[in-house]
Image (cartoon, one colour):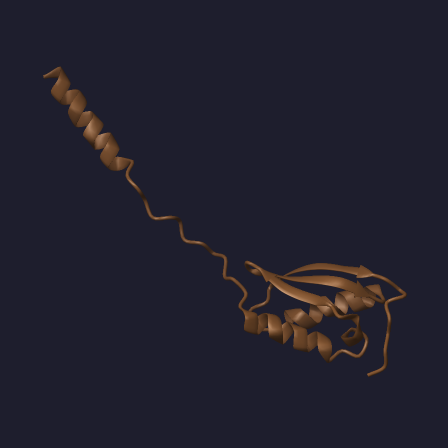
Length: 105
């Protein structure tokens, strides 16, 4: 009888600890079309276009890398990419480099 009760408890515990569905994720990855739209927004800005800013996506965040000639340019780059629908998070790793080459368009 004691073995039966222990066996029943073991079966119940194992039944409760079986595989479960992973929790739903709230991360909405950024697709390549949004990355391309962000690049286009940057390429239309006269100060930022010659800077060759690198744009990539990491999960639900857009990442900016490279050099810009001013803090205002760094801030504007972030503002421009956030105009793309669906871009809410931006990791702005742009470095202010006053000597960033500026070539006329």
